[in-house]
Every structure is written in structure tokens, then in C-alpha cells.
Image (cartoon, rainbow, N blue to C red):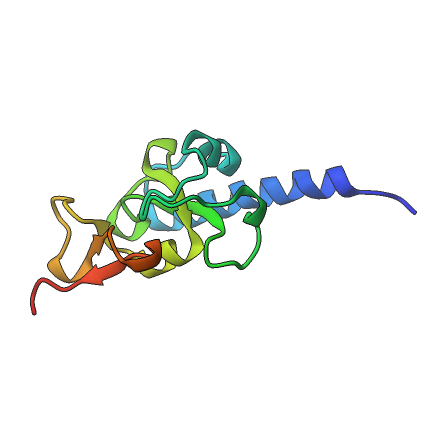
Length: 130
């Protein structure tokens, strides 16, 4: 039978690039084509949220610590889809962070400030209003 392995990998890469740019276009923010693997390599396969390793072999899995791209300033807050605004993050850290900003960002609302030093490196939200 025909082995389309390399073609499937290339198609998967192009789908990932298109997915990111299409989402950013819906928000009307600055967009550039981003190679996810290039960003993950740039960041040394380390989660920018908690600082723990994001194992390369878990890429494209549903594991909590699978590496994926995170928008440092979320698209929902006007952040761009550019290499300078994306970073490696664990799937769980990225999901939990949602549209929050890293603690210390100027316009971060108190109830959405991200705390880096949570147990097990998964992160947590800090409510400063309590």
C-alpha cells in the first residue's frame, strides 16, 4: 500500500499554521505565519508559564504537559499572532491561563493574574480581591 507518512506530517504542519492565522484573523489582530516547532525549539521545550520541561515526545498528545503554543498577550486582549507574542506552554498551563496575563502585565485585571509558583508547576490563578 501507498505510504503517505511524510505527506501527512507536512499536511498536519500546514493545518496547524492555518488554524493559528485563521483564529487571529477573526480577532482582527496582526498576523504572521508561525512555525510551531520553530517556536518550541526557540523556547527550549520549556513552559513559559511554570518553567518546567515540556517533553517533545508529548507534542500532539492530550497529556497535561504536552507542549503547545500560548499567546503571551491573548488574542482576546488584542495580542498579535506573531513570533514575538507566542511561547511554549504546557497544555494544562495554557488552558488554565485562558485569556489571563502573566502577573505583572500592566493591564492584567487582579482576578486574572497568573501565578508562576503553583505546586507541580501547573500554575494557578490568584484573586487579589479576596
